[in-house]
Length: 462
Image (cartoon, rainbow, N blue to C red; front, side, top):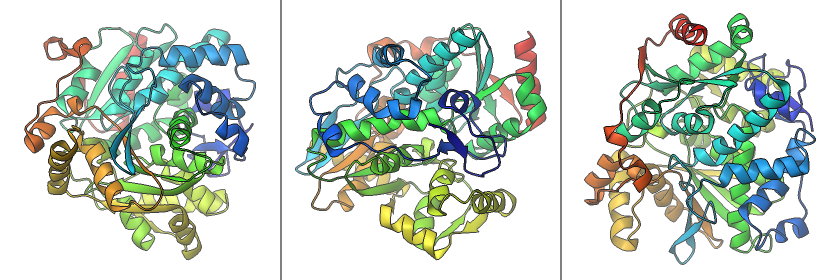
């Protein structure tokens, strides 16, 4: 399996090269040159298998010979050994035809752990083999950062720098990033919003002198391995509800488009998905795009669902690449326009293809709080704001097939918003009970490329 850039001007890479490279040197994102497919019998054979066994079968065609079979199985086993549920990503029934897929049983209580714990093990295996050292820089709207730190903290061959928007993450999210004591972990509070952090990250990858001098690697969802790991739970959850012999639909709280793009990949691989529903908060660029084809930034408005406070959804470029029949030049023009003028317009053909695959919905702040209260009173489920947005839209989009809504974070990551909505204060798990007593280490930095690069160079040299 080879990997190609969505902008068509970067060299083809192997899985290992794409994983360690992150963003392509032409500014694009790596995707497989083709979508491998699984037969109906293969998918049916997942029934009754462990999460780890299904993960091996789903990901192996993409990984190729980067890892031997026994080595890859060991990597997967290590990645999920710290999860707090034997099913790793269990289903909970909300009503007769609506289910929650709980993705928050990893060490930092968010769905990012599902991918990040795996990436940490894959990076470690690859770097040990090569003897190389890398500098991982990530941008986070709240959850990616803590998951990356948890995956890479204390590793000898890695320095980790996580940028998050100062004052725009929950206190639990911030403390998960600022309290680790390992010397290779660095939390950077950036002046600006998440899009500022994400733009800085992309600019670092496009500053080739800096990129090469620090051996820059990325673990945001720009990294293909992140998306790949998320494909697995679409298969495990769908099969548990009868796939491939019946279809299922998924509703996904969406910010950077990686989680729902993983569902699109699962469908390309042969999983019988009926509808993929994009659930957005008031920062609704993806919902607006699907309604009109107009992909225009309107500024980020802070919300009680901060992981969705995004206007530049990086992984959307991967979908647009397919919508435009993998024409890299056309994709490059669209996303350069987004960067330069803040908008682009999908062609009618591309919009029609997107509408064939996706539905969408938008939930306001007041509606989010009302949904948290409603689900608690009706079902006893305490949902984080992101999961509540997904559940509300999932209810509205229900049809004849089962609907699975992705519950992306534990409610204890957003205790203030949850308690204000339903009166219930969600407690942290015992292993995190002292989180608010731990000392914090954080560096405030301007939302400026030179300033951030200077901090990274100084810390690496020191």
